[in-house]
Image 1: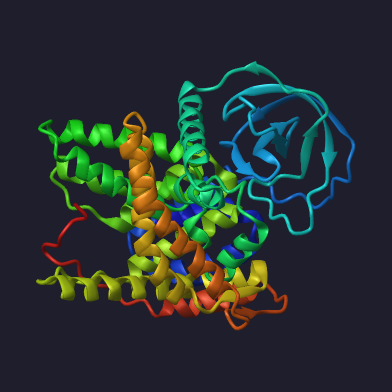
Image 2: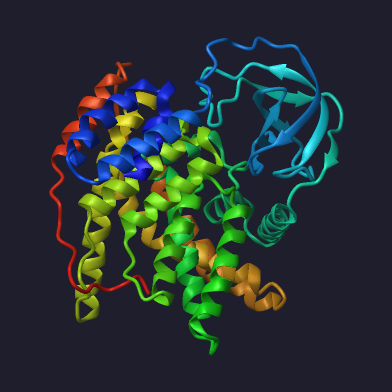
Amino acid sequence: MVFLGLCAGLSSGFSVWNVFFALVFIPLVWGSRSLAFLIVAVLFGWFFRPSPLPLVTVLGGIYEGPAKVVTVPSSVRLGLAMVVEAKGKRYRLYLPKDSPINMGDEVFLRADIVPLTPTTIPQRLEVASLRPQRPVERVHEGFVGWKAAMLVRKSFVGYIEQYSQPVLVGLLNALSFNVTGDLGGGFFDALRRTGTVHIVSASGLHVTIVSAALAWLLFLTPFPRWLQLTALTLLLLLYAASAGFHPPMIRAVVMVLVGSFAYVFGREPDALSAMSLAGVGNLIWEPEAVGALGFQLSYLAVGFLLVFGSLGGVEAGLFKRILSHGGSLVRASVVATLATAPLLAFTFGEVPLISVISNLLVVPVLVFVVVGSLVSWALSGVLSLAIGVLKVVVEPLSGWIFAVVETTGSWSWSVLHFPPFSPYWLVFVYVCMAALYVPKKRPAQFSTFW
């Protein structure tokens, strides 16, 4: 209730979501103790609510003065893109690919103010973009951890660029570290048409894959469990920061760590509580994230998966396990697609129709590509072994992903198009979806992720 109330309060400038919260959650908790927590959270969110999206268009001009970098730089076709706060406004700053500027740095710049293109979706309430006229001067360096994360990402990208096939470099960098600058626009469109764009975005799926691999390695060591989990925490935070530290990754890291540390404190892990804790922390740290499309899609998908999805039991025998995991993947893909379809239709005017098929063909392979890429990079000190992993495992499977996305994305019927419609239709659709929820009694015992 705290997470939901905080979302409602912070989104005071986004009245559609307030209507949705009022229609669904107030009747749900009316007469219970949760109503008090909901009201307090709404008031807290309202007090700290961000300013709504600017109603004016910044046509241009020149900006000169200080600015602070508030997001981890992302790799784009133009080099590096990041959001900066400057004189009470937020801008999207573009810098060369080799720029040392990082999150938390304070800089001084002189730049041309360029209006955002009509297709650009402001993710952090930016009003325009900045194109520096001269090298950007760093006045104060931010937290050293962000610098370490950037060095990790640059090291991985440099390794892949040197030893992988040129045609697969952009895909491998995007799959492993959310470095999408070398992906062609046509391939990115194919990812969106097939509902697989999450495999190259800052996705919780990547954190889940990496955390599972790291946990398996760490739990083989003879160290105490609390020390293993501490190492897992540091490594996951480093990976998430290297890949952009976007809301989906923050959510996934917190959920994995809460579930893992529950063992230390002798408590049962609860996925919904972990997701809510991640959301509350994310919104307190960055209140304007409530209006970001990535935040909304991430929590919608995972929330619906936790409420309406279910994992199959552990079956005996390899064939039965494959069928069980395959069925769970299909169910998860269907639930996530239905949960995000209304918002995608409103934002982009289209919804992928073949996402279930595409994800069933891609996601199982993605696990081996991401883990194999990271293992190959980690073994770069033993170059022959590292290149062997890259050539034998990673490149063939990444080629499969490329072929699946290109093929299925070219089908003319792969996308259902929608004309522009009122955002209040989202309220109607999601209220109907929420009405399907049936509370489930938690079993006395259930298997954990580990």
